[in-house]
Every structure is written in C-alpha cells, then in structure tokens.
Length: 108
Image (cartoon, rainbow, N blue to C red; front, side, top):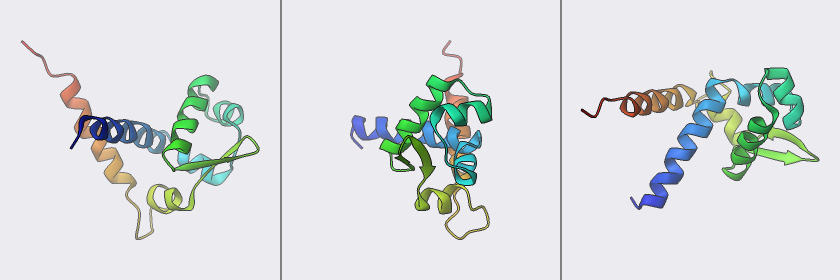
C-alpha cells in the first residue's frame, strides 16, 4: 500500500469510526440538519462539527443539500441499521480500538 493510500485509510477510520461511535450518523439519519443545528443538538463545538461533516461528505458517507447534512443510503445500511445484513458499525469500533493502544505504547 502506498503511503497516501494508508493516510486516507487511517483518516477514514478515524472520521467515520468516531462519527459512528459518537452517534453523529444515527442522529443525522433520524433528522438531517445543518452543522450548527447538529452541534447544538449533540452538544458539540460548531466548527469541529462542520469539519467532521464536510469530511464525511468528501468521503461519501454524507451529502449536503441547501446546507442540511444527511447520511447516504449506503452509510445508513452499513453504520446505522444494526439489524441489517450490511451493518458493520461494530467493526469500525473495533478498528478504532486497534489503533488506540498503539498510540500510547512507551518507547523506552
């Protein structure tokens, strides 16, 4: 794997994994909203919420229409519909789990 491909994979794991873990995707599935509206509903920083949502749009997990963000049908089936055959939300959480211990290993 080329280093830029690896970078994109790590970024996607972090952005999508935390969006799933924090309930952002489920909340947008329940009610599409602006970045400001979603940040108020969830108690998040508005600027950080906008950055996250724009990244999710760029990666194809969300779409934006007239300033309102919604998740794509593919993201809904893979990351929100826990009873569906395509659900993989638990695996995204596992990927985050795998990444975290390695960040804090002592080097000496």
